[in-house]
Length: 162
Image (cartoon, rainbow, N blue to C red; front, top):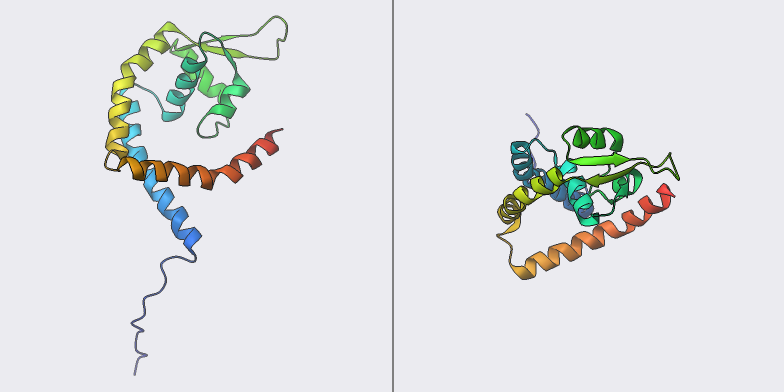
């Protein structure tokens, strides 16, 4: 006679930390779909958009490529390729200062500024689609929890890059 199956459900997760992480990952995947759809309409990736947004905030100053890479929301292991693609579309300009030829400075062009201006409304609408169902209180709580979860890891990344 075959062994009776247990009615007790096997745990879905090994730990609360695993459950939280997998929920975070799944949520990111679902929310990312909206921005991928939006940015593809403009021939951009989310990473390229983020770089342009940072350069717009720095304008009229320029940022060193390594500084830009550090400020990106997600790591860019190949910042040179990202810069090459944006420069190829005339969205940014690259310059090597005379005083330090090893440094590469990048700044946003008028075309890059115009593209971001075109994206401002659609990006706000995208964020509303992604998280607009949350109350203001829930949004503040989510932001605080995400910062708290990320904070010790940000410090490790900063220490490792020095």
